[in-house]
Length: 422
Image 1: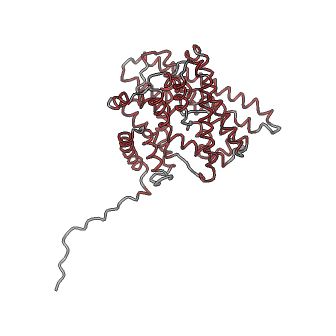
Image 2: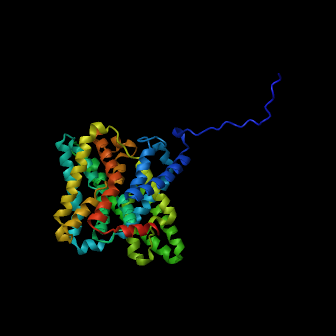
Image 3: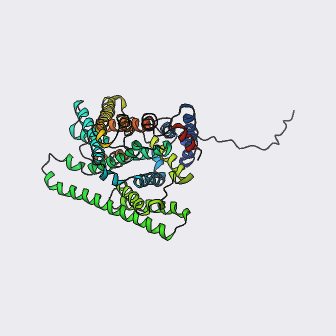
């Protein structure tokens, strides 16, 4: 019997994408979509901050989880991520009130004391556990800072109204700048026991002074230019464009000239606020586009989480977290009453300061080139620092929600729910 010919057209075989080899752009777009859904679900069901959901999805999509996206794929997104960081730091600078530090010297002293106490506690704890003293000092310097990025984003979400929220922003700005300066001087400490230290000391000190003065002057110029640009173009819709342009310009010039983008943007924000007053409108998240930038930023932070060799370094990591908590608590409590805080507010402020600064850690361990950039750093202790930072960043928004909303009572749940509908 003759075989009946198949007259139906042959359909091409469907090539399903391999989840382990996703296109970087497609993969990141899918991860962003999943992050928004997961963060909203966790916030609705468990009242968790959305930032936790974003970072958790980023961690699960990274090699730490299901390896959907390689960390190297973030390199192409770095300019966008840098813009999100720069916008938050600039807004942080615009919220600072330097006059407050003059009017309340006890508060000014506490801004330095809390970071110093945290650094001392971490340093002593690590040395007691057998860590090399020079590397313990480096970890202590990093541990003294609080993340301005997580703090600013948490303030956006929680919208606190009170002293604890205001002091949180001021303290994290000051201790981040002090950490940056200490890291600039780290090579001088690392070679302190060598004969060439005396000859190199003036060079390192002069370099630190150049960074401070240059960053300050560049920030002043950026704030002044934003003021002048706002006067020439008084249309309200153009102000966000001017802000983004000046933020990008200031951050790029600071990086190119070897200055501190962090200090430059903080000074630029303070200068713009002082000159423009209410004409400076720093809209949270820069509108819907800024919201997308923030989601991308915290997904990226989650993808950069590292738990390498956690089985070997967990005693140092836990000691670092515990000593840091104790040190910041003592530093805040010592001057709480003279600076005008109640004990309940002091407890809330100490807990709100717990998220460790990812900016400072990336300065130390970016691309793991710290062996040449920072001589004398112990490998195991650096891994412990990265593990501790991962844990404190992931739980950081929870600390701040507990501190600002439940302990200090500055962010009421109904206010937060109304803010989500805006």
